[in-house]
Image (cartoon, rainbow, N blue to C red; front, side, top):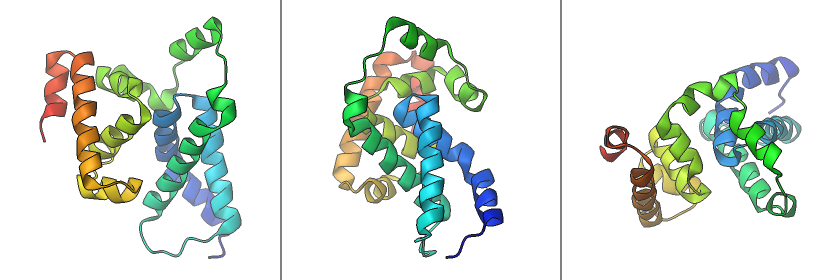
Length: 171
């Protein structure tokens, strides 16, 4: 592909906010999300293996999600011990990029979901993919995606006031 530094800079300007938000929704850790997104751009630049087969945004999003899942499966993440001060700091920290999302009770409830349900909600409501596209994107069957959507909605219904729930219950 032969990406030069100006093209890389333009790509970073165009996609970094979106990728950072996606990584944050998976990891719920701003600094780790930044590291993941930086790693995605560096990897893309180093390998330059993208062949214009689809949308660049979708390709970078998939790279970001895969890196987030790898991190969530890693030994260091699973064995990390948070102390009480660190947990309070995370809950009190407010980042300008995601502040709008966090103000919403819906976004807060979505962030509390387990990853396998959270990603379905994010792709369906935030990214506006249909069930078939989500299934292809996550390498799952369409029925699995539908089942996870039903479970995610049930979990959200328990967390949200009825006026917020109405927004998610409409297809």
